[in-house]
Image 1 (tube, one colour):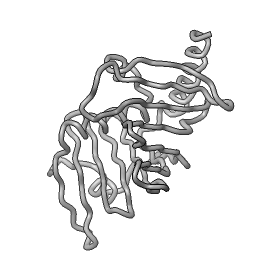
Image 2 (spheres, helix red, strand yellow):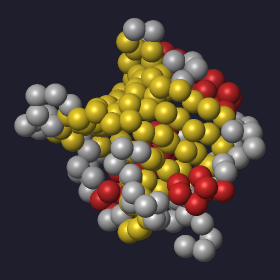
Image 3 (tube, helix red, strand yellow):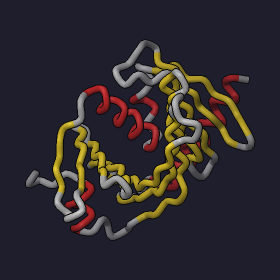
Length: 195
């Protein structure tokens, strides 16, 4: 049964990857719920993930003026001020690990996670699901990850930190940009060669 669940999950992953293998530039709108044990209701955020295949990805929270940029070499926290100017700082390794994990999940790159997590497969309401449990304690304090998807798209990512603290990300819509990002988007949401 476990092997059947794994196979169905991986088939869905391959379908999604096949649909997007020629898509160099993508944006993904999402809702994010941040649950805290001391709050009755979750904190709600909206954001955009921009993926520049084989180059970098960024997560933009427009209400907060925050951009988190991840490349293979580094992760940057960028604060965009109301006047349009921005300041950057390097993200500490604990938070950088978290962003690397998130980027691997959205890229469906499970090879990058195999050394750090045990995998458990399941099904729910027409979706195939993968729960990842850390093999040992990690710097980002993640206690579990859960990824749900269909044959067409990721439907939800849950990141649990324990003691009632968790983040739930629900993708809303995806757009492919055949012409690439504009110069303004590259300047605001990625690391340029001048930086």
